[in-house]
Image: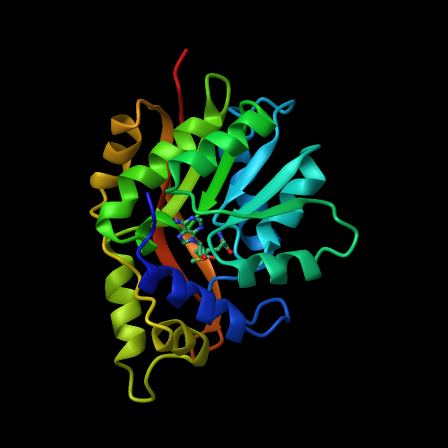
Length: 240
Ligand SMILES: C[S@@+](CC[C@H](N)C(=O)[O-])C[C@H]1O[C@@H](n2cnc3c(N)ncnc32)[C@H](O)[C@@H]1O
């Protein structure tokens, strides 16, 4: 299935305009504050011998960290411009990168045929989807996992909306990096908290663990504290 072109174009124009420096995108927090803190949540479930796909990898900050921990890591993103950023930020090629739509069934079958069963890391992708794309996206993940892979997914919680709206409606408008997201027509979507595990179950996956975690951004409040967004995480797989 194809993601609507307006959605694809919104991501493409966002990433074309995004500055290359690390930390210049709203959610692009350093790995030490993101994936590194999440490792204890998913490492016990990941078979370390399997490749890892960073699903919706953006400019590859988390992908490059994962490549220090796993032998083969592949960053996949809908946006060719995002993949361009990720490749340029990885001159030694510690990870591989591929432009692909995670909701494209054929593309995910082709990737699985090439990697075999893989683990999947996904941070902040499902909530950006058009509602109709959410189920195919998680089906794409199930295809990549096969029998042996496990997925770790962390997505904004419903409560994040209040924080984002509060920031956007402040006297000076949204912080610049959040404003850049809105300017390209990307609005954090609303996925009901209880709906997220439902997408994974509907794709035939069993929930193995779940919890809450704050998603660190790169913007700070006037008092200097980092803006963090309420999020939920889960680990799922095809089951025993
Ligand atoms: C909020 S960003 C998060 C990027 C990265 N995971 C991170 O944490 O820095 C969401 C990313 O998902 C990508 N994306 C959105 N829909 C996608 C799809 N259908 N297939 C693959 N990537 C997608 C976007 O291009 C964007 O780079």
